[in-house]
Amino acid sequence: MQNPSVLVHLLNFKITMLGKVSKPGPITIPTEKITILEAIGLAGDISDYGKKEEVIILRPTDSTIEHGTIDLSSKKVFESPYYFLRQNDVVLVNPNKYGARLGEQVFNQRLGLAFSVINMLILLYGIFSAN
Image 1: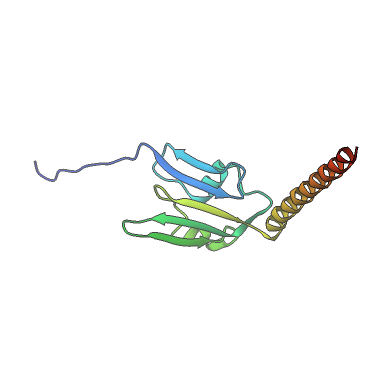
Image 2: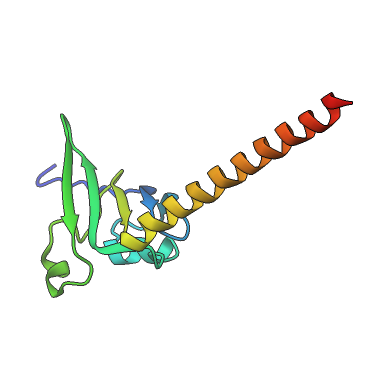
């Protein structure tokens, strides 16, 4: 054979979306290429509490994990080396200041509820143990 060639196609391409997106989790893509914008679209978009200016891409290499940041609100998003995702990339959308506050508010509400339940149990114990 003279000048043999081999053509390889990926049948399943997997990335993982984490953080403040509507549907976090692994995404299997039937094509060979996907952009960061398409991946975010498949994950149901970034929520109102996600930081679009600082999306982190974790890219496993042979010996380490490469770490990059992309600003989706910038015109330079198309020039980024992370615009096209690769097999096994992890995309992390961090919370913005409102998302971080929302988490604190939920924690504070649950803590307040827990203290109310404990107070009520102590009160009921005091009432029924006095008789």
